[in-house]
Length: 164
Image (cartoon, rainbow, N blue to C red; front, side, top):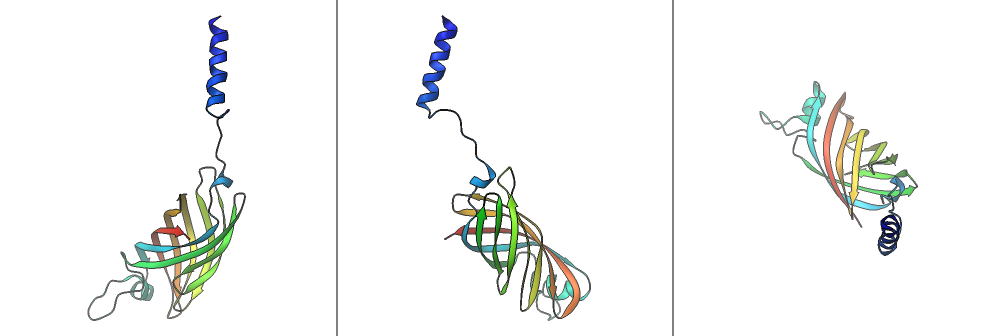
């Protein structure tokens, strides 16, 4: 009798709570839309002239490099999503380009692509962001080149963008 009562109670509680528990799939994470916000340079590494033009703080009358640690810069993107596949256009200030990627089982978006425009080009080396409501945040790393130098600088950034 107790086991029948337990089954009846389980069915009643299940029905009252909307039935069987639901799971969220990676494709349920909404990355599609128009996003804008900022990214902050956490670390910048370069060698020789790349270090000076891209990463260095101001010194001896020389201006700061374009991406010194702590620099806050604009970012925007327009993304489409089909299941776990994501694609769109990324703008890092004046540099724009196409990006593609996917959403993993944990709801983390990874992207690859290149954004180019004066005075630099940036290739995404690593991109890991999550969405909570209308905010996407996470970290991204880029390989940056500038026309004035044949060398490459590496950036690690944190970003926060809002869907509009």
